[in-house]
Amino acid sequence: MAKKVDKKKEQQELKKFKIGDQVNWQSSARGYQTVKEGKIVAIIKAGENPTLKMQKLEKNHILRCSSESQVRKIVSYLVSVEIGGEDAKRALYWPRTQHLA
Image 1 (tube, one colour):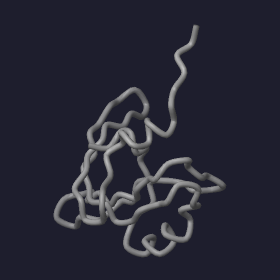
Image 2 (image 1 turned 120 degrees about the vertical axis):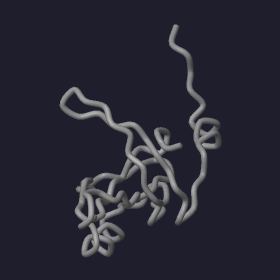
Image 3 (image 1 turned 45 degrees about the vertical axis):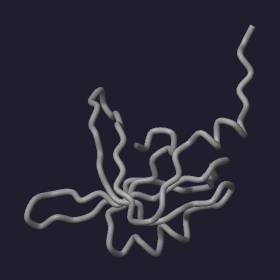
Image 4 (image 1 turned 90 degrees about the horizontal axis):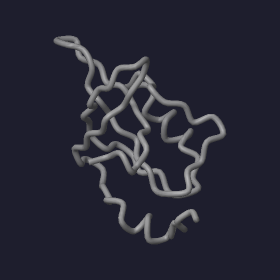
């Protein structure tokens, strides 16, 4: 028998962040896993489409996320990650909240 998941309890247990908080998470692509570190630059409310916030931040960032018709059921965050060396640029990510630490 499958275990029933209490979504409200699960949401309450997720750590809450505020703009400016440093966070990290592990991501994987093409068989490689990397730890990304960055700063919270926007908070996306549950049920909110992040497109407008992404567009405002897009001029200063390389987008590493897509928001086309995506809405998440819980609060989520846009994270700015510095990439590159001396000529560092910033990338904008929209990681899943449960992966942030």
